[in-house]
Every structure is written in C-alpha cells, then in structure tokens.
Amino acid sequence: MLRMSKLADYGSVILTTMVRDPQRIQSAAEIASAIRVPVPTVSKVLKILTREGLVLSLRGAKGGYQLSRPPTQISMAEVIEAMDGPIGMTECSITPGLCTQESDCAVRANWQRINLVVLQSLEKITLDQMILPVAKTVEFRTQRPRAPKLGAMNGEQA
Image (cartoon, rainbow, N blue to C red; front, side):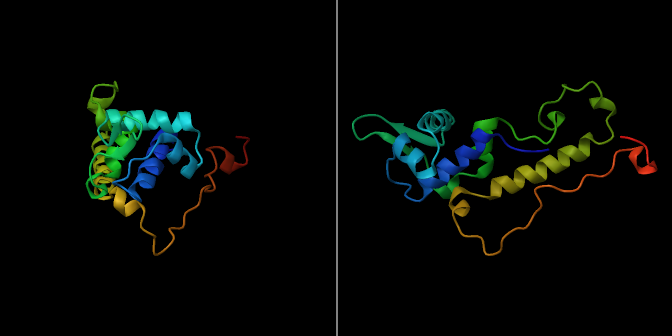
C-alpha cells in the first residue's frame, strides 16, 4: 500500500488550519485545540515545518507560528517532502543504487514515470486549494476484494 506518514497527514491538517487566517500568529496549543491533536504532536510537526521553511516560528509573549509565505505558494508536494522526505513510489524512483536488480529491471522506468506524474500532481495542489469545498465527493473503496491467491483458484488451500 502506498501511503504518506501520519506526521505528513498532520502537517497538511496543521497548515490548512493556519491557511484560514494566514497572517495571524497561532500557538501550538491553539492549533492543537482546533484540530483535536495533542499539543506535543502539533509542536513536533510545527518544528519540522519550521526547519523546512514552510512555517515561521516567532518568539516572545505574543509568539507562535505563521506561514512563511502565501498559501498559494506552498504545494502539497512541499508539505509531504518536508515531513517524509523525497516522494517516491519505489526506492529506485528517488535514490538510484539501492536495488541490486536496478540495471536489469524491466519496470523501473515505468515506476519513475508514475512517480513523476504523482509528484507533478502534488506540486499543482496548493494549501489554499486544500481548504476549498469539493464540488463532487470522490468515491473510493477503502477495502477492495483481494484476488484469490495462486492455487486457491483450483480449490487448493491457500
């Protein structure tokens, strides 16, 4: 299964919460209360987002966090990369030399092509778009029936 980490998910939720009032300085506790996530988790994510340049950390009595630039200039690719590192469908899509079969792999180039399409799609979606209502709900199944295992089709035990 291809999936981003829980921290990347929290990063997107935290940032989209900040987008609703992008000029306002917000505390970790305030954001945590708004999204119902524990303050230590929100603080951890905000520190990463600050280190990666997506959020500014402002000290002092009226300190807190603020987006580093307008939400139209922060892509979802940046958010995921800040939290999880380079986006890759397979290891060899982002880091050559990790697989012993890389030079003879018949599907590597196609995985790289798929990786590029996913990355380009995430780069086109910005934080300001993430808070817009969706006109039509995207339907999907969280659980698809799995194909029978080999051998099980002939009445054998799998």
